[in-house]
Length: 392
Image 1 (cartoon, rainbow, N blue to C red):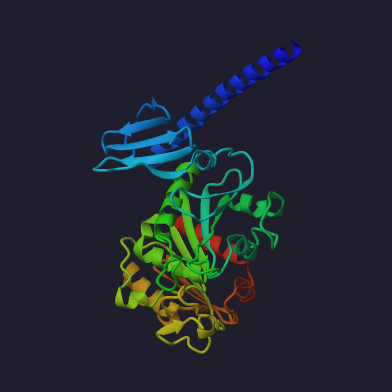
Image 2 (cartoon, rainbow, N blue to C red):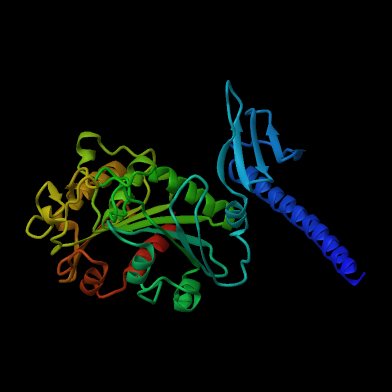
């Protein structure tokens, strides 16, 4: 009798637990579907009530004849665009998308977290201080790691993957800046990079950055979103400035000139956004050293990795600055226009909208450039971005 009593309790407990799990799944599904409507209005342009048809919880959008639903059995979220022989396409797990939907969460505490945006394999690290009103997206260089470049910028104070205790929250709080570090992808074993005409990551990195910028603005209520990058990350910044300039409010490329691709396909941005270029005169990696007046620089042949490097040629940053100034305000910078303190030569054109810094003793790395400038790279970036924000 006692055994039967225990068995009955166990059965009742399992039944109750299943109801709780079902209720949680339903609540989670509704939250993800609500988020998708807010985040992808071009796909889901109206508010729709959820419908159920086991194992599906779904919504139908008649304007686009699109269905978005959760399969309760396998825990996946699916998209169906109606058409002949159309089949649902899995876009991510309910757990992962719920993480994205909730990530804007608590604005009252400093938080570090990582996630992937739907449709992209890039892991993205978020260093989110309470009260952030701006965001800086920073792209690492070739074969780089996002936590390592965060360390180079003294945001992650450890040379290991960050924890909440190894982050310089004081600087982030003071700047009110949400720092964001995506992880580039690779078509070979270790060449993690970006798709920027110089190297090939195997991904649509323009689309990633467009979605990421939109995500920051909508999920966190961020008004100003900046893009910066080092080395191959800077080369991706150049591609964005030319081909998708409206995505970010300001741009900065460090040791990362534009691809020679733009000689045969001239850069023609739809809008002119602020741009800061920083390059070391002693940089042997992209062969600036001894070649300041050359039309083209090039990645050092010893560092060219095939097939990841598709075009090692780079446009001289000084020549690009002249072209940007002509596009931006009709100015043509000359060598006499620079400010020279003996360590750094600086050109500011179009009312400071466009800036070039030549670090005379700087090489390729961020630390080498900082030593030549006598100031931290993160502070140099924020001084430019903040100055532009004040005058825009």
